[in-house]
Length: 230
Image (cartoon, rainbow, N blue to C red):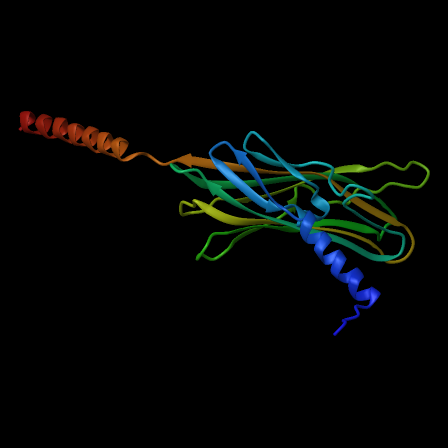
């Protein structure tokens, strides 16, 4: 029996195999932690790298860039990057601080732009912790066609777990929006994304023993002083 495969099926199968061949799990080794992510789903963030204890994204959006712009109606651009972070033995994850920045331009009294999203930390077996990405100032500056200029913006989000974490899945959701209800122009672009990690060293058993011994000695001194006074 001879099976005939249609050209379209061959093309689809080849594309799927090609995507699998190029997709890969990457690992970044930081100071006392390790990050793993799939390079096939970096989206508009671009490939990340580690600078000290900061996850930094270079070539944000590539070309045409991580931006939203319109001369009429609404335009939204969104992208999400997710990864797994694991602390080295003897350390815990105690903080996640996100910094983002870019610029925007708005022409028209009713035109507007927005930068939003969410930082999300999800440990295994525990409810997710979230923090909205909030701009440090309102994006209300206006420009004009004849004296066109962009205005810089910054945004932040932070999560500080109450309990010690050794591993978690972290996602950064970014949303940019531009809105022109009548006449005008609105543009916003993201140029920088940096996520900093705070790690805490876990005291070793010997350190706990020394701490307890020191506390015991202090209590002994206090007790003796009280007895001498009486």
